[in-house]
Amino acid sequence: MTMNNQDQSTFTGNKALQIEEALSFEIGGFDRTGVDFPPAEDRPNRLGGLGRDSEIGLPGLSEPETMRHFVRLSQKNYAIDMGPFPLGSCTMKHNPRLNEKIARLPGFADLHPLAPQACAQGALELIDTLAHWLQELTGMPAVAMSPKAGAHGELCGMMAIKAAIVARGEGDKRTRVLAPESAHGTNPATAVQCGFTVEEIPGDATGRVDLAALKEKLGEDVAAIMVTNPNTCGLFERDIRAIADAVHDAGGYFYCDGANFNAIAGKVKPGDLGVDAMHINLHKTFSTPHGGGGPGAGPTVLAAALADFAPVPYVVHRDGEYHLIETESANSFGRLTAFHGQMGMFTRALAYMMSHGKDGVAQAAEDAVLNANYVLARLKAEITPAFDGYCMHEALFDDRFLKDTGVETIDFAKAMIDEGYHPMTMYFPLVVHGAMLIEPTESESKRELDLFCDALLSLAKRAKAGEAETFKAAPVYAPRRRLDETAAARKPVLRWTPAANAAR
Amino acid sequence: MTVMYTKDHEWVRADGDLYVIGISAHAAEQLGDVVFVELPETGKTFAKGDDMAVVESVKAASDVYAPISGEIMEVNSAVVDEPGKINEDAMGAAWFVKIKPSNASEIDALMDEAAYKDFAENS
Image (tube, chains in turn purple, red):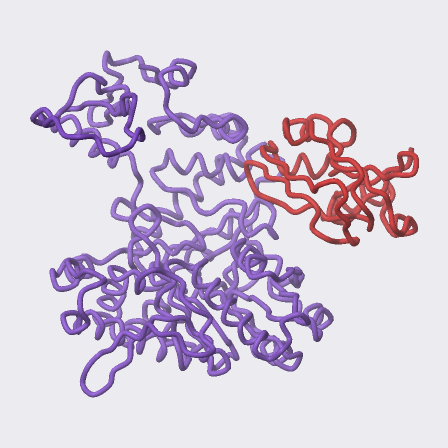
């Protein structure tokens, strides 16, 4: 067994409840199995020479060993159920257990996607009700429920825009998409995937879209603009109406990246801002688990101008029954997924919405903004905010406070691990040097926020007091010390083999 | 030999009829350890300002833009095989591509060494 940074002070390498856990391949023998099967009967082989000719190479562990292995691995994971998860742009809010209870009701959990519609009326009603809530919250007339993540929702919106442009006979003419330089990387990726070329819109000194620069780039060859609001600097795009009007006047569409909708849900309807398409990350805004804890879901709302091009399937309520419509209309751009979307996330998101109510959804947005501003206000004495003024749901800092300390953003983040925190988002957005993006969400109490802020303030003071060496060595209390990210990226070992393991 | 720079931290210098392009030592230092580089194929043409290559470090992925318009005549495969060269010798051995300019006067609009140094320090 090889272990980097292994602690030699105990025989096992364990430190009380912090168990040193090897890979299952290293624990289990290949000649063992935890389950006894009777020998296979002598049956004729119908595989026509395609049968396996060597061992499958799976490690054999007993049932308790298997159970312990995965439980021990799970205990090495940081989770929102263990402490604040301040990853900006990711919205790691608490996942209420009520959502889980509802999602596990057998009528939802055990339903097969091919069940006859007459047997799935409740599930179809749920999809329809959720769709209605999303339309109401965004002020948009149509919604495609099937996209399975934020980026998938972007793809849905941009495919609808592409279809609309082609239908106008401008498919060859409108080939450019504009996106701010602070955009999520998925925005340009989506546009390129849809066959567009992407151009960056510069930001202004306040961290927002430079309206004049945007207007200069607009023209008859622009298909769409993709803007996140609030943007990735955690700031509300105050010129959003003027941006929408300018794009519309130039004949383009306005795609809004709804990743940060959690900051304005129940407060602002994107439809009122002139948005033509926007995805909603149910897993961020409406508390369904994500980040290793579950799949995402990215329903995409569409304005009247794009509604005709929406993908199938969708649910309609007619004559007292819910119908799943899977036949494409003339203009629909088609189908995005095999089935109907992330049903488990729909259930959880609707449970969150219904337990909070209209006023509760709005208060969640208000509290998320309040918490982020509390963090900003408490930290700004020691840690430099990237921009002046209030923020929305996340507070963005840069690395000016670390100037001449010898400590970099990454060292600061690693030191946070020793304090028991998952680091915030680092080096994103790219427009800010050494960025640190903190999103506390509405989930955190004042006590949690104060402890978090006190820990960060203490780290900032230590960095400025010349403790660079300590920071460079961090983390020291984690199960592993700092990993060699460069070697991991340059010489990745992607598959376990006895030889690769021995070479570690 | 005169090296000219862009605001996006690419450098260009003449090499016979061609121009050699790379990213500046300042950019390499800011990026940190470079772990991946994607270069264009020879024969491809770019207009000034087009996305031409991608550089990925442990911190971030960044686009590299064509500082001048032209056709790619040669690419430095050594830098693809060993991206770490960019951190060692960004201005020399770790050049990216050689381009045949379609409008060589474009280079006059770029910054010289002193102007770039000033720009990099103040941005």
